Image (tube, rainbow, N blue to C red; front, side, top):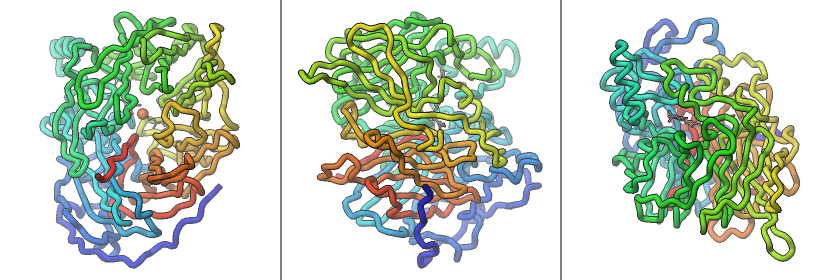
Length: 562
Ligand SMILES: CC1=C[C@H](O/C=C(C)\C=C\C2=C(C)CCCC2(C)C)OC1=O
Ligand SMILES: CC(/C=C/C=O)=C\C=C\O
Ligand SMILES: [Fe+2]
C-alpha cells in the first residue's frame, strides 16, 4: 500500500551560510568526496533550515573517496543511504511539515555505520563503516536534529594514520610484512587488534548512561545523549572475559541481559548487569549441541521468566577470523549438517528448562518472545519471533556496499519472513518454525524490527520493521505487522531507504499501538528526512527534511526528557 505524502514546499527559511569547505565539486571526474547531497550543494535559498544552532565546520578528515566506475554511476552510487557522512558533526532545528504531537518529549538516538572510507580506500561491507550517531530531539512540537561521529579508538587511529588500524566486520588492517602479520595474529588472540567501532546500536541504561555497542565487548562506548560527544569506554568491571558479545543486549529500566559466546568450549554464557553497575554476573551457561563453534548471536529474545538462547547454523569461525581477506560468509561458516537448536534458560535459576532442535534458520534480529500458557496458567511453550531469511545466508553478501550502490532496478533482495518459533515445554525434542503471516503482506522483505517496549517478553500484537516494495535490493518500506489479523500496513516512498522504525508510546496509552513510529529516511538524490507515523493508523503525521544527506543507520533508543 502506498501512502500519500504531505504537501511539499512549506514556507522555507534559512539562516545558513555555507563554509567554504562544505562547497564541494560535484563533478564525477574529481577524485574527491562526492556526496552530491542536495542539502549541502543547494544554494542557501533552497535550504530547509528553520534556524541554525551550531553548524560545525568540521569536514571529515581527508575524505577523498575513490569514485564509482562510470558504468554504474547511474545506479544507487549517490543514494544518501550508502554515501559516507561528510561532516564530523552538525546540529540545527528542522522545519516540520505536519504536526509533531505535543506529548512527544525526548530524544531519539540512532547509531549506524555512516562513514565507509578512509583516505582513498573504500570499505567493502555495510557493517564496516565508522559509527555515526544521529539525534532527533522532540519538544513542544519542534525538532532539533543533528549527527556526530563516534570517536572510537578505531576511528581516531584511522583518521590519524589514514588507514584501517583495527579489524572491522570485513576489513582487516593490511600487514606491512610477514612479521607484522605474526604480530597481528598475536594481537588478534589478545583482542588488541579487534575494533571498538561501536556502530551497531545505542542503548539507554536504567541509570541514564547511554552506551553505543557492537559485536566486540571493547566496543561499548558511553556518549552524551545531548551533544553526542564520546565520553569514554564503558568498562565491564567483572572478570567474565571473552572478546565478543551479543550486539543487542536486552535493556530495561532495571537490568541489562547479555550473551557471551564461548568459542573455546562451544557455548554461551548468559549474564546480567544491574542498573547502576558495571559488573555482569553469570546467570547460567548453555553448551552447544551442534558444533564446532557457537552460532552467531547478534541478538536473542527473552520472556518474563526465561532467556532464549538461539543456536543458529551460521556459526562463528575461528579460521575465518584469522583470514586477512574477507571470506564469503565473513567471520562465520554455515553448518547445515550440525543442525539448529533453541535453548531456554530460567532467568531466576540459570537452569536449562528446554532445548529443542528446530528447522535451519538465518536471522540477525529477534523481535520478541512470550510464554504460552494453558488454562491453569502453566507455561506450555515459548513463542519467539524473528526476522528470518529463509535459512539463506545470501543476505550477508547483498549487504556489500558494491551491491547496495549498484542497484539497477532488478529485484535482488532475498525473501525473508517473520519466523515464529514454538519451543514446547513438554519434553519433546523438536520445536517448530513457521511464518507468522503471509510474507507477501510485507513484500517478502523483513528486518530491522522493534516493538512497543512495554510489551517486551509479553504476549504482543504488533511489530514494526522494514519490509520490501519490489523490485528492490534492500528493505525499503516501514511495515506494521498485526499478528492477530495476520496483516501488514506498509509505508513506502519511491527511491527512499527508511531506517529501523522506532515506537514511542503515548504517555497513558492503553492500546499497544497508541504512540508514534519514528524513522530517519535516506533519499536517492542526496536528501534525508525524519519521519513520524501515527502508530495506530500508520499514516504520516510529520516529516522534517535534513539540510544534507544522512546515510542509512541501524538501531536506536529513546531518551525521555525529564
Ligand atoms: C549485524 C552487524 C554486524 C556488525 O558487526 C560489526 C563487527 C565489528 C563485528 C565483528 C565480529 C563478528 C561479527 C564476529 C566475531 C568477530 C568480530 C570481528 C568481533 O554490525 C552489525 O550491525
Ligand atoms: C541491515 C540488516 C539487514 C537487512 C536485511 O534485509 C541488518 C543489520 C544488523 O544489525
Ligand atoms: Fe542489529
